[in-house]
Image 1: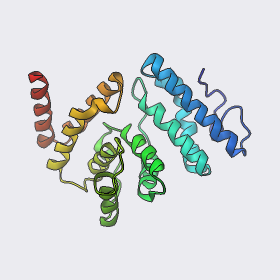
Image 2 (image 1 turned 45 degrees about the vertical axis):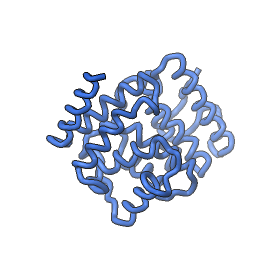
Image 3 (image 1 turned 180 degrees about the horizontal axis):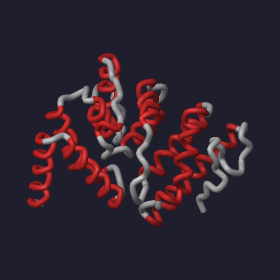
Length: 228
């Protein structure tokens, strides 16, 4: 059974010494495995059941050493990805941390985890997070997530669309709306049916916030679905 009993305000993994980074990393990864197994049984995870896990993971992502940070990021990502209902909005500081991992580009696996994590944040209000992306950062992001340096990372396009949506840079809204439509029509290849349905609703919510250009793509999506 997955349990975060004993998690307090100070980031600490229950049942492990606070200064034993190897043990903490192993425990976090074990929790990740249990979340995956639970998701196969229940498809989606009751968010209220694991809200303390989100708090625990966020603290370790920013305060732990590298192995702990990335194990915590996996846990945070899985809890958000398999959530049954809406969690509290992730803080802009946490979203900034995901962006930092992507732009640091230390290792393809690190970038993949951060892209996956950012892809769990579809559907936020556009004004909730307003990252500042200078020209150099935009160039790195496009090259890494959508250009010649892109690896076989199915979450990269989601991360890039989320960054474009919230920063209001990278692409203009006309092109961004088209890219979001592509995510709608290709969503089945990244998630189970239950998660996929939620992601569809969240992408539509993003398009709806974009006004006429977004709603036009929603109309195209619904028209195509009727023809299927």
